[in-house]
Length: 292
Image (cartoon, rainbow, N blue to C red; front, side):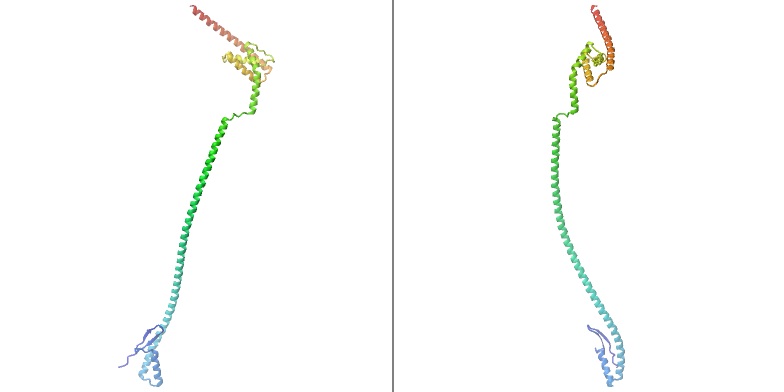
């Protein structure tokens, strides 16, 4: 019965990877033993075959060990890179958490500051509102005082206007005074002219420039306006005074007024005759009616 060929077992340890047979002998120990037997000349055919078989097995194992070593190195590098990446990620996470905590703290501080600012702003607005209300009340009081003063001033002005004497124009007053003085001076002369006209004394010379005019006014008032003797005398006196104050009568105008007076005189005489005849006839009628 031939010996069972050794089985290569690959064990993973924390330090390295070693090929072993089914007797749990390392490949290095088995190879060293065969080398020693070959050197001493004690190597048998069986051992030679074992050497060849072992060499073939070890060739594959060594190749596998190289691949495994390369993969191990790759894994180690990947693990190192992963570790660095994890450390970097952890650092970034820490930084993110730090920034997040700082941002949260800043936001909380900003909220507190905003709340304080809002409180301060509300207080400032309340103060400003109170100040504005006080100023408005003060301005209203001043305005009311000014209105009351203006009203009182208007009342005083009205009282002064009502109690003060009327305004007198100095020029007009002087003119009126001169006119009144002239009127008083000429009033007697005008009255005498009216009396002369009433008795029929109407001269037409230059020394009596107003008699003809006065006679025309007097007869016109009686004939055309049907005024009484007293009313006609008053109108005549006023007209003569007005002419004396403002108009100088020329000789030609005196002649014209005198001619008009003569015509009016004839009309007055005719009217008187008609009135006398009418009165006579009325008296006759009355007498005749009474006799019957």
